[in-house]
Length: 158
Image 1 (spheres, rainbow, N blue to C red):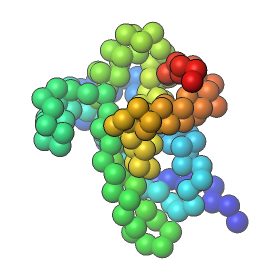
Image 2: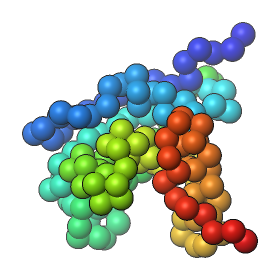
Image 3: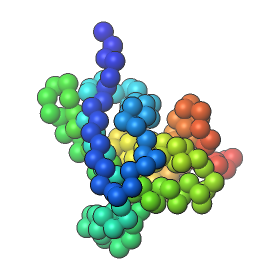
């Protein structure tokens, strides 16, 4: 029998303005498209923060004294035989809003891209070199198109 819901999602909103943050079921829809092959029930925590908190977290864990759009903290910890704590996604609402304007994307599309990007990091994907970056961006483009959003990246033909 196929599991209907393969994620358990908790969301913390730690920013003054919570307007225009997607609903939980929307986050779940995006994450499920990334995790469609995963059989375990995957636990993911999402924390939505302001620029100050994001800057502090980025400094503490990456040594970068600036705010960023998303940080992913992969745990991949088996809780029991059917449940895995996949990790945490920390998103900065204000940065995502600024980037949607900068890149001329809808706010919903930008949120979707950040959630997909972060969830791929929880699965072990990265973009530390050109090869990894190309693989990750190709997957992100494919998922975004599947969800009826524009590609976030324009791939060069090889």
